[in-house]
Image 1 (tube, rainbow, N blue to C red):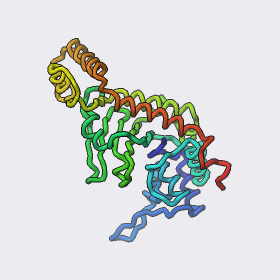
Image 2 (image 1 turned 45 degrees about the vertical axis):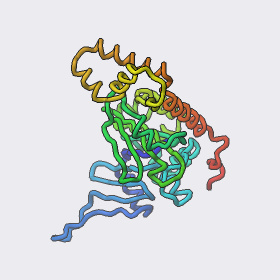
Image 3 (image 1 turned 135 degrees about the vertical axis):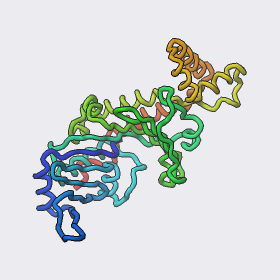
Image 4 (image 1 turned 180 degrees about the horizontal axis):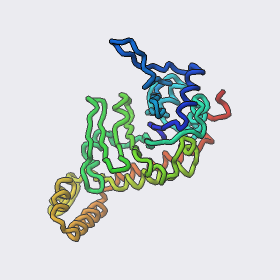
Length: 307
């Protein structure tokens, strides 16, 4: 569920003192090549995959909690497996105790998402079926240099990322990643998130999940329809309605009555021809995955059996 985070340690001096005294990580700084002067700041270090940076004013930690968990327990640097609520509990409690930052953090960025297995190759889904967000085109469409496909729909306070997790890690399974990336504190605060300890609250994870689903519902995902028995006039309409440039043109005409009329017609065509089965499959699997991961009763990892 939880992946990348960025947090600020509120008491920077105590945090720096703890790291220096405990020798938990190697803090590195810079030196003036010409004078030999050693600068006090910035100081940087790593705890497994997590990056720690300290300046004169602030101290930050960022990186994937999911990867940190896999690094700590299995010495594996990946995040294509599941990361349950029980795993999150262990990870956060172990990390905050080790770094001595309990009740002393402010989260500024957060990623929350799920890896799900799909009936269709995620590359096909991303290339052919995932079309728009709120009838706008994606902001980023990357290919990961042949390692996978990635689409991101960016808004002011958050973005929705959908990508081919299986291909990224060269897995044979069809693994699609759907992820909400929150980039503003005001959006985090709306979900009840202020410090890293808030991620231990079930209600907060439910808030994040509902926010993810609300965002995903705005994504236009249309089943393949060219081989179906559609009326010719409807095929022509769908070719227009599935093109983000068409909606850009409609918006520039400043006729919102016409815009809403066409949008309703688009939604009706999708329902009438049953072209939303893939989207419903993904939503169902996201719901099932959340229910599965929030329940620790069948988890092989538990707080009671980890020393």
